[in-house]
Image (tube, rainbow, N blue to C red; front, side):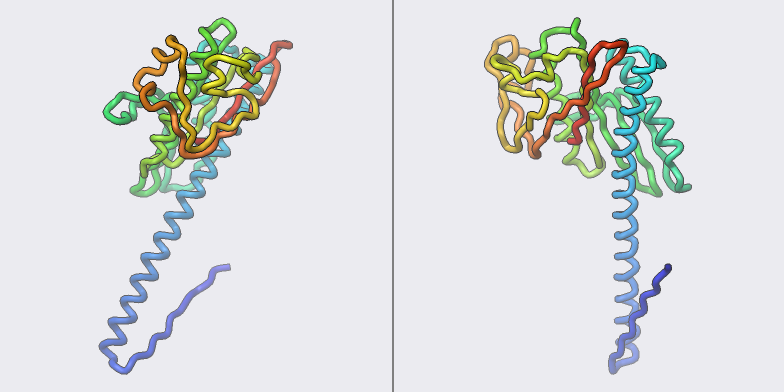
Length: 254
């Protein structure tokens, strides 16, 4: 049901009353516009988030049924982005908005190049917002798990930095693996310094850094200050099987 709001303002001066009425009307109109923009932005945030989770469910389902085959990380990126495009298309109902899915878009940080795996560009009226997704697919045959943890922390840290900008409205990190070592709690080594095992919470305001020499090299420009996150991030893996082979993934909203 539509509600109408009326203001009745009485003042002694007719001229003053007219000016006061116009002022209140303009303020009210501006506030209505602000509320509509806020609602549209938050509706989009919720829609994109639900679509990202649904896209991962569909992707995993297609892996399990053999519709998709796991290949390289680039294959994961391609298949996942296509599912996103389809879901965003069927869920776009307003004439004044559209979504665009971009791959490997360079969004520099501190004058350093930073290529984001998947960028969802949302345009509504004259506004444009971004949603960023970083993917990692680490296989048993890949390099050391220490490096996998470090590279994941770099992705999550960069996403947090992007999230601080006005145009970026949502950031997500998705990690997929067939190696249970990532899921298990480490007893020693670099993975205890940058933990990413099941049910671990990356703690807000805690600085994470490494001591091993090869790990230090992998840290690159992040070695000096390490990683200090502005929010807690809890890692929770989901387990599934493909032809009796075990796989795990998690999605972390940054």
